Image (cartoon, rainbow, N blue to C red; front, side, top):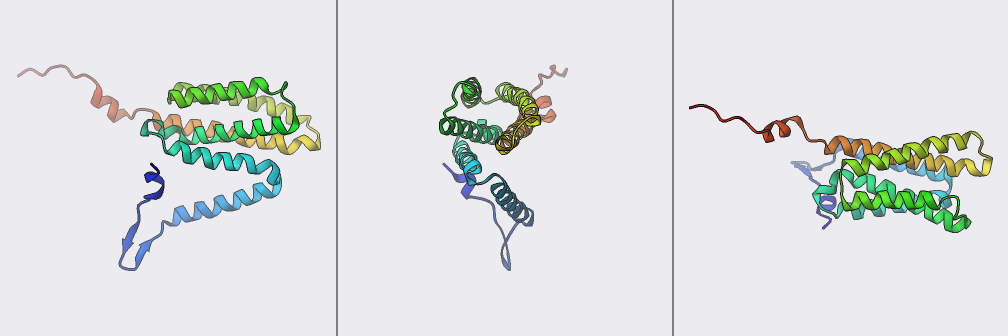
Length: 188
């Protein structure tokens, strides 16, 4: 089930297993970025989307290969949706954000049911539209709303960037398309 996560390729040499330096550097940088974001946003704002992002990523990786390009999209959107729902429950402010929650959930369910470019692009479109609204709100936000709005912006940017990567990865390669193209019969 989690073979692709746990069975990472190792490169053995005479000196023992060799570690991928690039991977280690990215892990260290990711850890430092996570620490810095937690320091800025505080655990109460940052913990829910972080746990949801990790959990959704691990669950999405367990699905079949058809959904593989969209694993990160599912993880980012699930994290944002979980953070949105948790904030709504804590603040007891359902009316202003209920439509957002319903649209995010519907688009996420569509992507899970039919992984593909169209649901991912629609999800990105909704987040770009919402990103513009959040940027506008940021211009007039008071100090109490600054950090939550910035976290919204980061989560939405994560969703949009992961959609771009997923759409590019899911695009059929030109060589594969050429191989599938019907060829006229050759004369003998």
